[in-house]
Length: 156
Image (cartoon, rainbow, N blue to C red):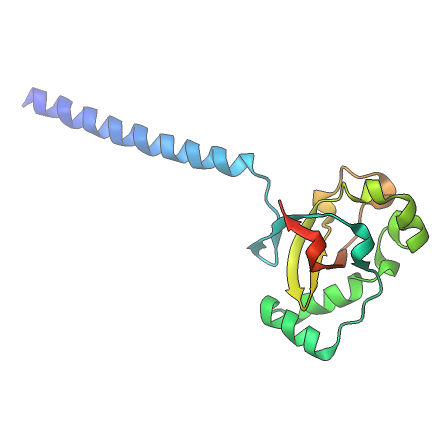
């Protein structure tokens, strides 16, 4: 009877140890990869290869809005994108073509996240909380979206 009790305790300890190792493994993996959630979903980080392929004052057509809304299922988010994808709402260092031309190499240091695609264009988010490493004049004060030609937006 005594040896059976030791066996049970040893088995229980192994189970607890295995469980704890799994918890630490998942916690460690989770903390190693910084994530950004967009509208409750994990956003995909992307790289932009050519800032010259940006639309800074793009007006979405009705059919484009419907296509984007079909991906987002969130009218308020679509309205936010429409408003904050215009250069006039962007940080001071990048809110005009002349300013952007002078600072393209700095802009490439932005952390971009794919939001949606429509036609041959991709909408990316430039979240403030993921871009605090940027110089002060580049950090968004609120939402910031940029529309690019899709061929210049690449997965990381």
